[in-house]
Length: 118
Image 1 (spheres, rainbow, N blue to C red):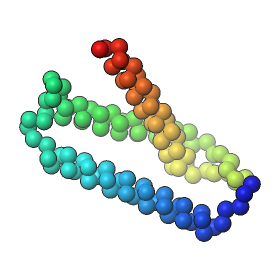
Image 2 (image 1 turned 135 degrees about the vertical axis):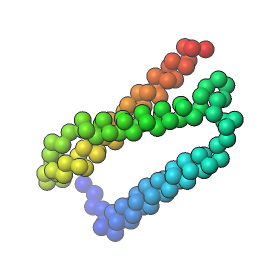
Image 3 (image 1 turned 90 degrees about the vertical axis):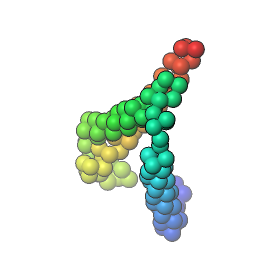
Image 4 (image 1 turned 45 degrees about the horizontal axis):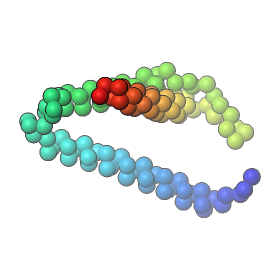
């Protein structure tokens, strides 16, 4: 197993923190900008209620996160020879894994359904 110096590991961790922070800031700025620039004409596009659809997607995503967190396992796991028992982080890891899988399956289903609709 190759040795990774502590300095490189610290640099990688800080880069991860910076990338995560930038992603969160860009997301918040984008949502605020979209809400502020929205007009009444934007509510229905091509017969699709855009505003209602956006709210349904946001609420469904949040419900998916909560549901996968609640149903996530808190069983301790062994990592690097030590037993990891932090219930919150075990459930959070399961939440992100299961939510990602659900979103990928949903996207795939959407592509397949839209392909057969036309």
